[in-house]
Amino acid sequence: MKIASFNINGIKARGPALARWLDESRPDLAVLQEIKSTDESFPRDLIEERGYNLETHGQKGFNGVAILSKMPLEDVKRGLPGDESDTQARWIEATVTGQRHALRVCGLYLPNGNPVELEADGSPKPGGKYDYKLAWIARMEARLRDLMALEMPLSLMGDYNIIPQAEDAARPESWREDALFRLPSREAFRRMLHFGLTDAFRARNSGAGHYTFWDYQAGAYDRNDGIRIDHILLNAYAADLLQDCRIDGAVRAGEKPSDHVPIWAELAL
Image 1: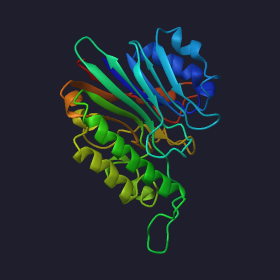
Image 2: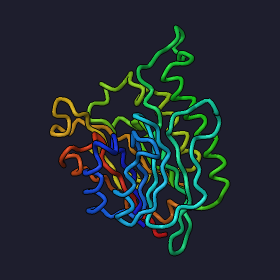
Image 3: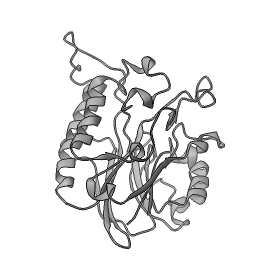
Image 4: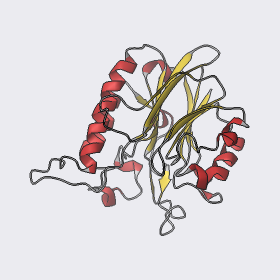
């Protein structure tokens, strides 16, 4: 089964780019981020005419996540538990069943966290965007503990807005104080790995120069001045089924592309 994640940066603006990728890559399942559309206004035909089932968790003009799947989507949940006042559409999960195993899939769009607002002691300023990012991660970790207890293959996929290591940025020194690369963000990513998750891409690829995001400005893609912030994390049950994981970097060179590109993994499900 081929599973993928793609931050499309607006379904209305990038619909043709998404359609081209679906036709060429043919994932069995994909999670999307930044659909920037309400559920009602999402162009479902673009997905469904290609044989996919679709579930969305949308928001007008911002955020928004979706799951599309060739298999039926079961037990769909929208929104990350832990804060009923949080109205940002950043989390969706569902279960799909392959030929041999079922897979619980979580699609996420983790907060960016910039600008980083700090107190005099260096702690995040309460109510600031970086404080929200770290609080959101804490809620995700709580949900992860519940998901790990299911004892079934699990994949957490999406735009994490975290650069895990220096090798995941072309110019790591320029990101040092950015919310994507600050130490608390990287520590949170490592906690998830220590909790028993596998970074699918790093399980199959090593070294620098592998990126999923390039800014639109200053010819960043042409210079390969990118960062790796889109990730597929697998629990032990799913990691045992991992066959490959790649980044579709060439998608960025297409017409009217997203600033992100898809990342995909093959699982023997």
